[in-house]
Amino acid sequence: MNASALEWPARFLAHLSTERRLSAHTDSNYKRDLDRFIAYCTQHGVDDWARVDSQHVRLFAAAEFRRGASARTIQRRLSALRSFFHFLIREAVLKANPAIDVQAPKAKKRLPQTLDADQMARLLSFRTDATLDVRDKAIMELFYSSGLRLSELVGLDIGHADLADRTVRVTGKGGKARVVPMGSHAVKALSAWLKERTKIAATGELALFVGRNGTRLGQRAIQQRIAQWAKRQGLGVHMHPHMFRHSFATHLLESSQDLRGVQELLGHANISTTQVYTHLDFQHLAKIYDRSHPRARKRADEA
Image 1 (tube, helix red, strand yellow):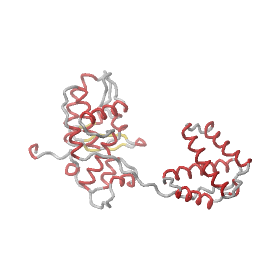
Image 2 (image 1 turned 30 degrees about the horizontal axis):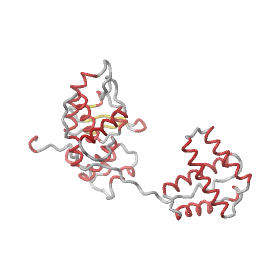
Image 3 (image 1 turned 45 degrees about the vertical axis):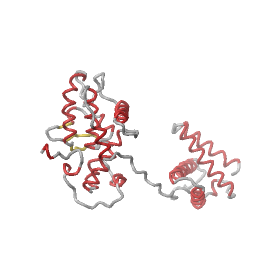
Image 4 (image 1 turned 180 degrees about the horizontal axis):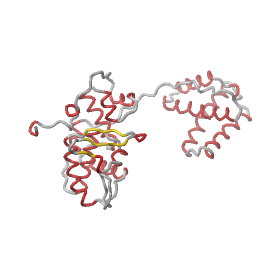
């Protein structure tokens, strides 16, 4: 690259810092990705940005793949190039974006970490000798019973849970509301918590789950309590709230084979998001929740 061409990456990075106010970490990644492409262009005799075409970008991506770069890394580098070339178009240096139609190899989807049914039962089988223990059991039973996101559970108010109807109304991403069922274990644990809640809840506090100070329990506190219980119960894994959601979806799919039904329960806008929980092509009709989910089934002696 000639000296004039090399001025533009620096201007672009300054644009990221001052106008778009991206983090220092993101700026560093952009610089590293642009440096890789500049080195490639220099090696192949491309000395000006106007000479770069889609074939150069495509061959660069292929070369990075041969070097051992992951699909995720290549995707990031192509994204950086698209942003950079878009900047050059804005500055009237280029008329078209040569990276716009270049696709990176698809990254392998990481399967979410889950607990099996036995591990989940072990986690949830603890005595509730204190008020906060009762609360924690209700939180974890509700997580597993209904597949809630952490933010959804934190946002619950008392009126959102209907114990008689065994449902809970949650507000998901984008403010989209949905009603999901609760299993018998969750209803029992939540009923016990509501009795204990009156001991510590601040006057006028509407939050379903509150902390020692009587106000709405925060996300960080829930994360810490769950990790502590997993350690106490000897699970040997780092437990976080989303693992309940992953386990809920996996166990429900194993039982019901109803991908569409699980999609609705999870509040996924796109079914492709739900498909991460299985490699099978589920085509069966919906089954009743109480027959599908491990924590919703009543024992024979309870019937």
